Image (cartoon, rainbow, N blue to C red):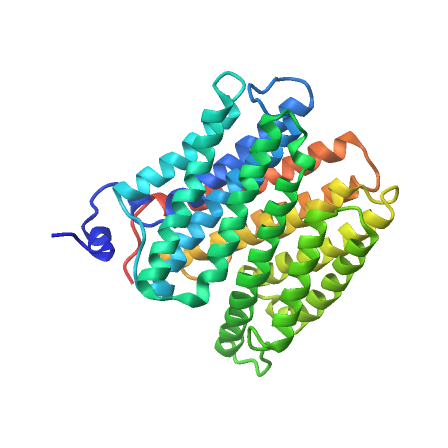
Length: 398
C-alpha cells in the first residue's frame, strides 16, 4: 500500500533535517550563498582561479541567482504546498534525493572546467525541472489553479538557466545575456506576486494582534493587478532590450506604481517587529531597483548598470529570501515569530551589503566591492549559524 505524503512525514525516523522541505534547502542554500561569495572575492582579488568553464563573473552570477535562489525557492515551495493543497510533495528519502541533485549541480558547475560542460549543465538543470514536476503534480492533484502563475514563473526561471548555460557553453559572457535578465526578471516577479499576498496578510494579522486600528489594503485588488501587469511588461522589455529609452520609461512607471502599492500596506506601523518590517524593506528595493535600473539606462555614466541591478539581486532577492527563510524557520520549528538580536544583525548585514554595493556604482572603489561581499557573507553565514540548530533539530512541541 502506498503511503500518503503526510504519513511518510510522520513515519520518517531519519535526521530532522530531512523531515520538511525548508530545512535542508534553507540551511545549505545560505551556506552556499556565503561560501560562493568567499570564493568570488578570492577569485576577484586574484588569489585563486576557479576550475569552472564559466568566466568568474558569470559563475558568481549563476551561483547566486540559479544556485542559491533555486534552493530558497525549493524550500519555500515545499513548505507552502501543504497550505495550498493539503499535500506535501517530498519528505525523507525523496527529499534527500532532490537536495542531493541541487548540491550536485553546484559542484558540477564549479568544476565544469575539468568535466564535460554538457554534463555539468545537465546536472544543474535537472534540479529545477524535477522541482517543477513536483509542483505541477501537486497543483493538478489539488486542482489548485490559483497557483499556476507560480509554476509558470518557475518554468521561465528554468528556461533562463538553460539560456544562461547555452550562452556560457558557447564561450559568451553569460552574466550580460538574456538568460541573466530573464532569470532575474522572473525572480523579481515572484517577489511581486507572492510578496503581494503575504506582506499585507502578515501585516494585517500583526496589527490586529497588537490592537492597532489601521489595516493594510487587502491583497490583489484592482490596483495591485494593474501594478503587476505593468512591472511584468517592464521586466520583459528590459530582458529583450535592456538599453532602450522606452524600457527605462516603463521601469520608472513600474517603480512608481509599486512604491504606491507598498505604501498601501502600512509598513511604517511595523517598526516594533523586525521580522515583519524586513518584508516591507525588502519589497521597497523592488521599486527602488526599477527606478535605479531606469536611471542607469538613461545615464550610465552616473550609475553603473551592474550596481543598479544589485538593488534587485541583493536587496529584493537576498533580503526577501532571508526574511521569508527566517520567518518560516521560526514558525515551522515551533518558535515564536519574533526576531532576536541575531536575526536583526542578519537583516542589517544584507541591507548594508546592498547599500555599499549600490554606492560602488557611483564611486567605483575596489574596497567597496570587498566590503559589500563581507556583509553579504555575514548575512548568510550568520543565518546558517543562528538558524542551523533549529533546522537540524526536531520541531518543538506546541
